[in-house]
Image 1 (cartoon, rainbow, N blue to C red):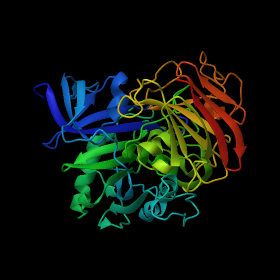
Image 2 (cartoon, rainbow, N blue to C red):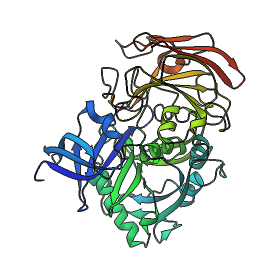
Image 3 (cartoon, rainbow, N blue to C red):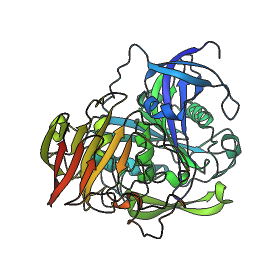
Length: 483
């Protein structure tokens, strides 16, 4: 690498540990016009601001610096959008074509699922197999109110609709030399080798929007989701070990593939049960759907459970993706008091208000440095909110350039833009990083919902939010901004 100015497409890839596990990281890289990809080192204080450039052409000012693994990289000093790029987030809508590419490590012949499983996991809105309690399309169609759907193909030996998985040219140890405790999987090598195999089978990769790399054994600590550039085209991408090949994990990792970060990180990593982009494995239903010999567990037989996600996406993320029409949200951007009936987020989109956005005096309410509140109603009894810990009003403090959150009780610093406001603060032992003897959901964000009669006051921002009453599947909320 020479010079200190680099231009290309920004890729962001998130690594998320298995349920109950630890680890995870966020990787940034720059796809250069010549087809090479260069790792970027982004300061944690700048990562959430940087994520807003996901998948866009950017100009990077920086200097050459090796990555922790020793490969050449760029330490980012400044990043700006390329002149032809809009700063506004792109609306994510329509039907996106996704290829599930089935890949076996050399010397490992197991195939945890038949190829048909991945079409059944994705394409129907309602499950047609007893081992699949909810489909990926069912989740995204309902969560986006019909704005986003997926059309899946499966690739393997012989091209599309295979019966046999493709075999990677190397053993698992080449791509991921360690186990549960690290974040070392060589995702680029899996990508390049896998796509070369796909092309050799006659698969036209150019027709797809997303590539899901489906692995027949464990990677490192994690499942991964984000974006790649191949032949100068941007793709959403996931890399899934067998334990993650189910709807709840794909709802999280494919969320990353369309540019969503995490939420939560008030008390510990992935601590919000109100967002599948945080506590993803809050299943409303869980069904045994496969077994495999787990390399990270000494080749012991491991059971895979397919879940119905118990939570959806938060309103702040839905709004970022362009899924909430202007008629279905209320914005408070001046001194006023308004009473609003908030309809449950998981109900179909009609005339009801789905989100209140409260702007702060003297602070940007849009753009890369925006800082504001969002208010939404969450009620159980509707699919993809059936795993919630309670009914109530959920408030998020959204800061688009928030520094990454870290500390003693966080095993990674992958916090995002949206942090829940806890209705019952400080009910978690931050000294010992445990519940302090409380039972779930009576601690941390398990009881973050604001119930009727409860008031949130932010004195510094001159904002008060009062939950007046519950009215059927809605909550009446009074919001005041006194300055």
